[in-house]
Length: 481
Image (cartoon, rainbow, N blue to C red):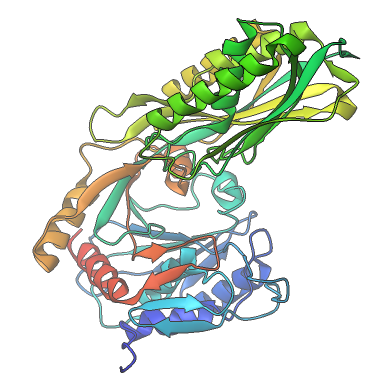
């Protein structure tokens, strides 16, 4: 079978150049210098700001000088994930492999997130056979690990009326909103006290839940290991004397927790009943989540005796708060079928050296006031339970503009090109557009891009035919806007 042709050639040639430049997040100096040199070699106005963001301005083609300025934007950094520890992302070039209609990397992340967006901008800047009004190509740094470039960009760096973000992963979809987010940490101080005699020690574990992204997957009714464990402890606490010895559950703030465990003690006479109640609980949960958690594993086993435990008052307040606190979808958008506001109870970890139980959660919303309300709700719940609570500053969302001229043109041109309407949607995760909307309130924005799969992992791959489709769509929008 013959190898698929890489079209448009100019974009894939630029992508090959990009993949020769090391660009790990927070270590983009070589990429910044490359982009600066690229713009200056073309004789274009090229600048960088104090944060390391780069902007290259291209004048309008002849006869298009009266068109409004359009900003094309992507981020220059990439997630660096190797299949083993031998690849040096700070010095080595990414090696690409073609398999059918897909491009992947040889043993690493491909970096098409967002290297293919960068390549499209480079191809636009160097092209002399396309029609467009004034263009500003903006390349932001450190999107993947902190949105540093977008956070640090000062008003006035960009001057365009419209912005096309080239950092989406599904061809045929136009994104028009995203969620903002913040993190909330609650800390319970506890006293280590002796465990009473005559008790049964048990370790209760939940593993192999589906988990997922706390934004993209929050509406998919996937079980949360933290909520399930605390739910069982709460109902047990109401029936008998329950002592909490340890809790280690959940992980990253932006992930739905897929596993966790607790160690508890109950009166010896309650040993059999605890097992019976657990089996009933597991049966109920398996029925509740039969469609989304087919691989879940639940376990209750006797464990070694312990000398100390969390004082009962703190344990009781902790369990009650985790039972009560919001988790999952809180509200849906009014204009499109998308989650507007949500919260994720991400992790609960006992830290013996500090005599603390640390609870981390994340709140998201495409509406800033709703995000504040969600964070306040979480904060109030834990404060009522006696915890110390800190709500992070967070980042803003991007609300849909129902009167977007750019969206109208993007939809019209897509339908004209491909004979079908694009899907218009939002994403319940963060995009740099949220920060741009805060710094440039009147900016009209959309986001689209070619199809990617497995991003942020060694399975990342780019669907080659969709690059040509997005390129044709992009040029049509630039010509008609």
